[in-house]
Length: 280
Image (tube, rainbow, N blue to C red; front, side):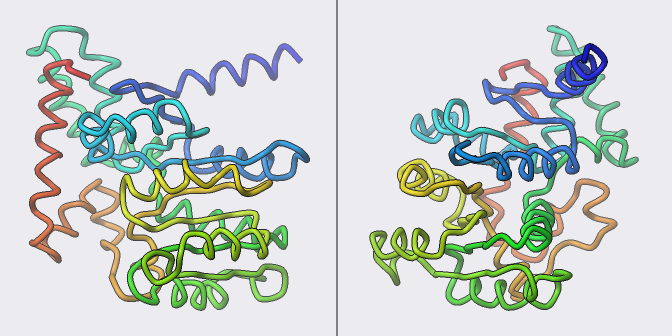
């Protein structure tokens, strides 16, 4: 028993906090184990995962409701992006002096490019796919809500063919959500379907606020906001190649493919500066 407790304590040391948000830093497999164990427990209630990236944190700094959600209401915040692993490294080794933190930050940047911090990151898109694999294995139902146009439906259809055993053991349903369908109807569809996993793609902030307002209406499921994941899984948008992802440069690939998103990427240099200045 003491050995198991020591293992849990050692695992917990891998977690860290930034800008008041606690991050689960134990990797993908531990997240999946947490999900599966939680959903197997009777009367545990609902679970809520947030996939946090630097843009989340910078937006939370200006949106008090969003800030309160990811600081107080979610059950698990996973670091969706190597920028948070980089920030964690700076916070751990950099001390209080900004010049020292700058040097450490440069060193941590080299680690990022070498892929050394990759194991701490849990990309939301990959987590969603792995969770649906868990659902297929257990015969659990999955609901996809939101997304652009019919991309939730396309993603659901693709999962039926790409996830082993999904057609035999799992069920998946989709709904475009607002404004095509009223929120009351959305909630009723979900309750009637009784999924074990609910993925919401309304965009950063809006999806978390929707989950916050509606999660208590359901029973025994895990909810997660997934941003643009339906775009990828529907086949409408290509993800960055593995090499770009390994280097933590998926954001740059997306910017090259969609230059109109450049304003959103301005949060990244601001986030880096706040970390270096220890204003987190």
